[in-house]
Image (cartoon, rainbow, N blue to C red; front, top):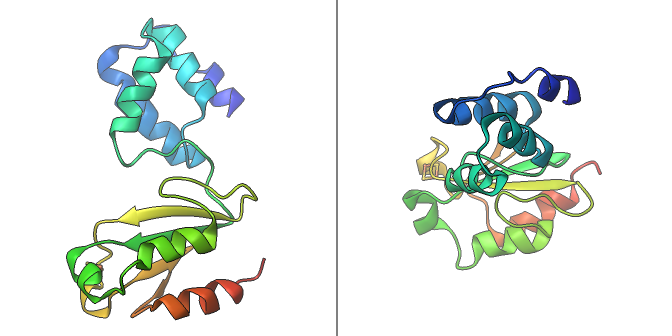
Amino acid sequence: MEKYISKLPDKVYKHELLSYLQEFQDMFGYIDLNFIEALSRNSSIPSGKIFGVASFYNQFRFKPKGKYHVQVCEGSSCHVNAEIGFIDEIKKTLKTDEKDTSNDGLYSLEIIPCMGACSQGPVISINGKFYTKVTKEDIKIIFSNLDL
Ligand code: FES
């Protein structure tokens, strides 16, 4: 990461910011604040403004993913089939919030608009493995069976 940051061009233009942010996240899985500081130095744009731009886009996260990256669909089909408080139950179980990572580094959570399995909802994915027709009761079972 330090090596990547040190190779940033001396002059970064405003119109290049998003592509640098995207590239950084693709490589490291999140946007490190040191990278935002480096972009700020090399573009002369305040770091707060760059952070504001990045946080406007839902795709960017600012903490490393957890050992288990959990994606939860909130698309209309999953929403209709989910029990009341379904997503809140997941947040409570993982002790984290959307786009965040639990303090112990085990879980990160991402809410997705649709995961392409609408007839099987509610759908969640843990490190790419899909779980379908998930109930609130299933949540405890699924997460207690993970290899921590
Ligand atoms: S709405 Fe959930 S998978 Fe499409």
